Image (tube, rainbow, N blue to C red):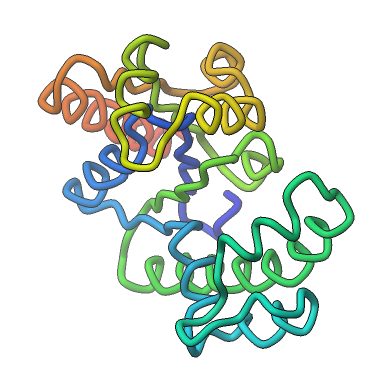
Amino acid sequence: MTGKNIIVIGLTGSIGMGKSETAKMFERANIPVFDSDAAVHGLMAKNGPAADRVEAAFSGVKGVDGIDRKALGAKVFGDGVALKKLESILHPMVSAQRQAFFEQKKHQGHDMVVMDVPLLFETGGDQQCDYTVVVSAPAAVQRKRVLARPDMTLEKFENILAKQMPDSEKRQRADFIVQSDQGIGYAETQIGEIIEKIRQKIRTE
């Protein structure tokens, strides 16, 4: 087990697939969730431990509330070298927070945790997981959900999709798939079944 005797479930899904709602369902089932995006936000917030380091590397991106993500995005977008520099600052910090979270939950008696990562397969994060769960919905449902968001354009949506592994490939690589287009009750049932299947595997190992 990658979380030092606690089962690590990697949760992912392309934009608009319902991953955030699914993460809440795991929490309601008493499975703690480590939100990687929230960790990054915290690191770059006003008094976040990464704010000064990011400002030193990318001058002019820090404002009164911490790192201005739009300004930072403009500096790293399409620049592989700049992105790698940013990742070299953030990834070790996120990794340390994640490991501390796993240890804390293990000491509290939990047998499994969820690692919520938008680009799980794209970044190789699935190698740190015992099981992977992909949240999926038909492309038409995904498109409708995303284009209903404020400040979203078709061009922006297509740019995001271009950076993400195709849903079909994620589904092939996943240990479990949650269909998010059949209503919350159906999704909750799937989550319960996934948790039970994993617990059964733990018992038989």
